[in-house]
Amino acid sequence: MINHQTIHDIQCTPLIDDQTRLIEVTVKVPKYIKNAVDDMEESLYVEALHEVAARRFDHIQHRVNRIKEKIKVYEMRYKQSFDQFASNVPDSLPGHEDWIDWSYLNKLQSQLTTTCDKLRLVAGQ
Image: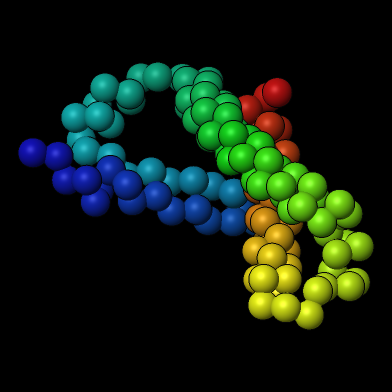
């Protein structure tokens, strides 16, 4: 029986070299997996990291695209950008609710886009 807690036990420790901004990643795995990969070269781990980053990038990029579609609905409804809308929010409950939702979508899009940019670098795209 596999102990899933052990498989997902990942620790990241900053290295002393702040100029390269590298971190050391330690992954704890069951012994049978360790034995199977002991003789593998470091390039295998780099390839695996690139593959995981590429898959994660695709997933997050899909989320960003869905968020952009939702933002477009607000832009079409109010016939203006968020900044224009935010400077003159309608004095109504629906107007304030739209401002809250729209501002959240903008913030989330920004955060996820930043994540995508980082993942693109890791994935080598």
